[in-house]
Length: 250
Image (tube, rainbow, N blue to C red; front, side, top):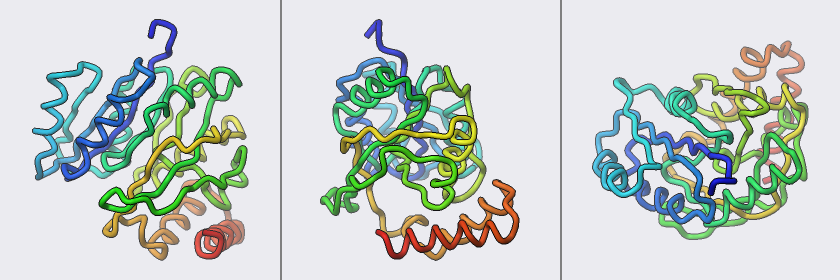
């Protein structure tokens, strides 16, 4: 553990009491031991606080903060990044899961290859935890340009090295806020590398914004035009590529 760099795990939560305990347990079961899990609750009205408190009593590596007002996932994640003390910043939403050797595999992959930003393969599960499919056809690396056309980085798999980047933050959008951070990272170093193992499980929820492909088009347009400052024609170009990738290649 003394030789393991500290990994900060960024976990926003909002009314996820049905899944949160299982999510925390997948962190506790990590073979890599030098981590801190920073949970930022966004004014949940369920049993979230009670569940987290039961783990706080058992493990000091888990940190818990509460927003004073409902602020959305981007600001909750950004607050956790502010509090983070680790060299590596990783992400795990309160309804997703990690494989036990996730951090061990991916941090070693980064250190041995000197990669400052990585992602991995993952599986999709439904709300009951039933396997849907593997997302294991991802490219060996992505660049800023390729990511503008199609985002291949699952948030629950991403890790970046603050020794290289410092701390960078997400834009305040209701959806695709993680994508804005990937683009910031890729503008500073134009490659993110894939650790070619299935290291996480993404829970597909029927009521999530990200399950509605048409709503996502609006968010991508805002990212291209207003955040990435592309002109109208380039924004149309990137959005067209995104639509083709999302609707026809998956």
